[in-house]
Length: 166
Image (cartoon, rainbow, N blue to C red; front, side, top):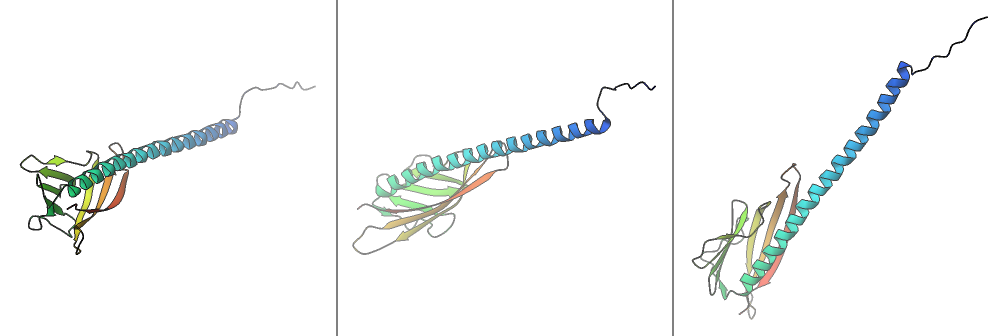
Protein backbone atom coordinates (compact mmCIF):
# COMPACT_ATOMS: atom_id res chain seq x y z
CA UNK A 1 0.00 0.00 0.00
CA UNK A 2 0.98 3.44 -0.77
CA UNK A 3 1.12 6.07 1.84
CA UNK A 4 -0.61 9.35 0.90
CA UNK A 5 1.02 12.39 2.31
CA UNK A 6 -0.57 15.79 2.09
CA UNK A 7 1.52 18.76 1.19
CA UNK A 8 0.67 22.09 2.63
CA UNK A 9 1.52 25.43 0.96
CA UNK A 10 0.78 27.27 -2.22
CA UNK A 11 1.74 26.52 -5.76
CA UNK A 12 3.62 29.03 -7.86
CA UNK A 13 0.51 29.78 -9.93
CA UNK A 14 -1.51 30.56 -6.81
CA UNK A 15 1.17 32.99 -5.56
CA UNK A 16 1.37 34.75 -8.95
CA UNK A 17 -2.44 35.04 -9.08
CA UNK A 18 -2.47 36.48 -5.56
CA UNK A 19 0.12 39.14 -6.45
CA UNK A 20 -1.68 39.98 -9.70
CA UNK A 21 -5.01 40.52 -7.93
CA UNK A 22 -3.35 42.53 -5.14
CA UNK A 23 -1.46 44.67 -7.69
CA UNK A 24 -4.64 45.46 -9.62
CA UNK A 25 -6.41 46.42 -6.42
CA UNK A 26 -3.56 48.73 -5.29
CA UNK A 27 -3.37 50.28 -8.79
CA UNK A 28 -7.12 51.04 -8.74
CA UNK A 29 -6.80 52.64 -5.29
CA UNK A 30 -3.88 54.83 -6.41
CA UNK A 31 -5.70 55.98 -9.57
CA UNK A 32 -8.78 56.85 -7.52
CA UNK A 33 -6.63 58.75 -4.98
CA UNK A 34 -4.96 60.78 -7.73
CA UNK A 35 -8.35 61.68 -9.19
CA UNK A 36 -9.55 62.87 -5.78
CA UNK A 37 -6.42 65.00 -5.34
CA UNK A 38 -6.78 66.50 -8.85
CA UNK A 39 -10.44 67.29 -8.20
CA UNK A 40 -9.50 69.02 -4.94
CA UNK A 41 -6.85 71.10 -6.72
CA UNK A 42 -9.28 72.06 -9.47
CA UNK A 43 -11.77 73.08 -6.79
CA UNK A 44 -9.10 75.30 -5.22
CA UNK A 45 -8.51 76.92 -8.63
CA UNK A 46 -12.20 77.59 -9.11
CA UNK A 47 -12.49 79.10 -5.62
CA UNK A 48 -9.50 81.36 -6.31
CA UNK A 49 -11.06 82.54 -9.57
CA UNK A 50 -14.43 83.19 -7.92
CA UNK A 51 -12.78 85.23 -5.17
CA UNK A 52 -10.79 87.30 -7.70
CA UNK A 53 -13.81 87.75 -9.95
CA UNK A 54 -16.03 88.98 -7.11
CA UNK A 55 -13.38 91.39 -5.85
CA UNK A 56 -12.62 92.73 -9.36
CA UNK A 57 -16.28 93.23 -10.23
CA UNK A 58 -16.90 95.11 -6.97
CA UNK A 59 -13.88 97.39 -7.58
CA UNK A 60 -14.84 98.05 -11.20
CA UNK A 61 -18.41 98.95 -10.25
CA UNK A 62 -17.29 101.18 -7.38
CA UNK A 63 -14.74 103.11 -9.46
CA UNK A 64 -16.87 103.47 -12.60
CA UNK A 65 -19.92 104.60 -10.64
CA UNK A 66 -17.77 107.16 -8.81
CA UNK A 67 -16.30 108.64 -12.01
CA UNK A 68 -17.63 111.73 -13.71
CA UNK A 69 -16.39 110.78 -17.20
CA UNK A 70 -13.99 108.62 -19.18
CA UNK A 71 -10.61 110.12 -20.05
CA UNK A 72 -10.47 108.92 -23.66
CA UNK A 73 -7.00 110.39 -24.22
CA UNK A 74 -5.41 108.13 -21.61
CA UNK A 75 -7.64 105.08 -22.12
CA UNK A 76 -6.96 102.13 -24.39
CA UNK A 77 -10.36 100.85 -25.47
CA UNK A 78 -11.28 97.78 -27.55
CA UNK A 79 -7.94 96.08 -26.98
CA UNK A 80 -7.21 92.85 -25.06
CA UNK A 81 -4.60 94.68 -22.95
CA UNK A 82 -6.89 97.60 -22.25
CA UNK A 83 -6.58 100.57 -19.99
CA UNK A 84 -9.44 102.64 -18.56
CA UNK A 85 -8.78 106.16 -17.29
CA UNK A 86 -11.64 107.73 -15.33
CA UNK A 87 -12.02 111.38 -14.39
CA UNK A 88 -13.24 112.06 -10.88
CA UNK A 89 -12.04 112.84 -7.42
CA UNK A 90 -9.51 111.23 -7.53
CA UNK A 91 -8.77 110.20 -11.12
CA UNK A 92 -8.60 106.41 -11.46
CA UNK A 93 -6.61 104.26 -13.87
CA UNK A 94 -7.44 100.55 -14.33
CA UNK A 95 -5.05 98.58 -16.53
CA UNK A 96 -3.58 95.17 -17.35
CA UNK A 97 0.16 94.62 -17.00
CA UNK A 98 2.11 91.34 -16.78
CA UNK A 99 -1.12 89.31 -16.39
CA UNK A 100 -2.23 91.39 -13.40
CA UNK A 101 -4.90 94.09 -13.07
CA UNK A 102 -3.73 97.27 -11.40
CA UNK A 103 -5.64 100.26 -10.09
CA UNK A 104 -3.99 103.65 -9.65
CA UNK A 105 -5.90 106.37 -7.81
CA UNK A 106 -4.56 109.91 -8.21
CA UNK A 107 -0.86 110.14 -7.32
CA UNK A 108 -0.84 106.95 -5.22
CA UNK A 109 1.13 103.85 -6.18
CA UNK A 110 -0.70 101.24 -8.28
CA UNK A 111 -2.44 98.43 -6.37
CA UNK A 112 -2.73 94.90 -7.75
CA UNK A 113 -6.37 93.76 -7.71
CA UNK A 114 -6.24 90.07 -8.64
CA UNK A 115 -5.05 87.31 -6.30
CA UNK A 116 -1.49 86.00 -6.56
CA UNK A 117 -2.56 82.58 -7.87
CA UNK A 118 -4.78 84.14 -10.55
CA UNK A 119 -3.55 85.54 -13.85
CA UNK A 120 -5.57 87.86 -16.07
CA UNK A 121 -4.97 86.95 -19.69
CA UNK A 122 -7.39 89.44 -21.22
CA UNK A 123 -8.92 92.75 -20.16
CA UNK A 124 -10.93 94.68 -22.72
CA UNK A 125 -12.82 97.92 -22.09
CA UNK A 126 -15.49 99.15 -24.49
CA UNK A 127 -17.30 102.48 -24.19
CA UNK A 128 -20.89 102.89 -25.31
CA UNK A 129 -22.16 106.44 -25.78
CA UNK A 130 -25.87 107.21 -26.05
CA UNK A 131 -27.79 110.45 -25.92
CA UNK A 132 -29.62 111.26 -22.69
CA UNK A 133 -27.91 108.44 -20.78
CA UNK A 134 -24.56 108.24 -19.03
CA UNK A 135 -21.66 106.50 -20.77
CA UNK A 136 -21.60 102.78 -20.33
CA UNK A 137 -18.42 100.74 -19.93
CA UNK A 138 -18.42 97.10 -21.01
CA UNK A 139 -15.60 95.03 -19.54
CA UNK A 140 -14.59 91.63 -20.91
CA UNK A 141 -11.82 89.68 -19.25
CA UNK A 142 -10.39 86.27 -18.69
CA UNK A 143 -9.02 84.91 -15.41
CA UNK A 144 -6.79 81.83 -15.19
CA UNK A 145 -5.80 80.04 -12.00
CA UNK A 146 -2.93 77.57 -12.05
CA UNK A 147 -2.42 75.06 -9.27
CA UNK A 148 0.90 75.50 -7.48
CA UNK A 149 1.45 71.75 -7.10
CA UNK A 150 0.19 70.42 -10.43
CA UNK A 151 -0.31 71.60 -13.97
CA UNK A 152 -4.05 71.99 -13.55
CA UNK A 153 -5.37 75.30 -14.83
CA UNK A 154 -8.88 76.67 -15.03
CA UNK A 155 -9.87 79.64 -17.18
CA UNK A 156 -12.92 81.74 -16.47
CA UNK A 157 -14.18 84.48 -18.81
CA UNK A 158 -16.11 87.37 -17.27
CA UNK A 159 -18.33 90.07 -18.73
CA UNK A 160 -19.52 93.20 -16.98
CA UNK A 161 -21.48 96.27 -18.06
CA UNK A 162 -21.43 99.36 -15.82
CA UNK A 163 -22.85 102.86 -16.36
CA UNK A 164 -21.20 106.04 -15.16
CA UNK A 165 -23.37 107.99 -12.76
CA UNK A 166 -23.69 111.66 -13.63
